[in-house]
Length: 383
Ligand code: GLN
Image (cartoon, rainbow, N blue to C red):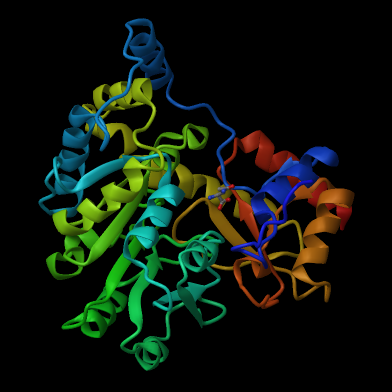
């Protein structure tokens, strides 16, 4: 007899990305749902991995990540964000950004601790908090620009507030934090013991000459933050599941305690290859304009459909409003579009614990031009 598990996540089903990708496969739909590029990554980087494997770099590297890679990363963030990060004590390589966020929560949360987050929220945050006995304090972003109501944040802060999680550029909405947001955050946490978890996996996917306001730029905020990054988003290799976390030494020490007994250390050949590849600092400089062109091209194609774009200032994603032509729920429309039009998207209601239905779907535009063209052609036929 198989024993019953008393679930730690009784309300959690399968992540929407897996659900929609499976539905896309089933109906042979073009997948603009789950966020991943369909264009090739830099062949130099794949060759480097191949070379490192062939040369025998296939055994465990240091538990916190290959030292040479941590050094490259420290140089990168120090230059990009005018900061000073110690590669030995403040950076840990992780199997992806999501894992870094999970590990950060696991390092700090005690049962009953509250974490403030903003909805729509990336779908792993709340389960990460709850599995660690924490309580998610959900604050809705203001529709339709998805800005933060800081007065509401202030009203939710109390002695149980352990952390605030922010995400810029934001998944799923493509909004980005402004200087004013940073100022508000600073004034709220100043003099408190509140940690910040900063999900910055889309750091370089930022458009319209906006600057990425990394938490690392602000020494007072950096001193209380786990800042989480992703190689997958920067080098077009989401399937490699490689990322890293930066935090002050005392916080990183706890993070590493959790990490060492979970994953212990990440894939070695990929780290050797990245350490070499990152010597060329220009690899990601054009990323913002590259994806901005895709956003704009997709938007120009989508003008043939009744979908109305909401602004996207960063990430892989743009939200489209369909309230002008349908009353269906986001979920129903996303399923119907996959089945009948052959285009998969993500209903934004999936990013709320209690679904909020603003009649918007998330489209991933990090695709080849021909993929975007074929998807919109299918949508045009559908209408
Ligand atoms: N981050 C990706 C997205 O938002 C998906 C990652 C995943 O499937 N877990 O689409």
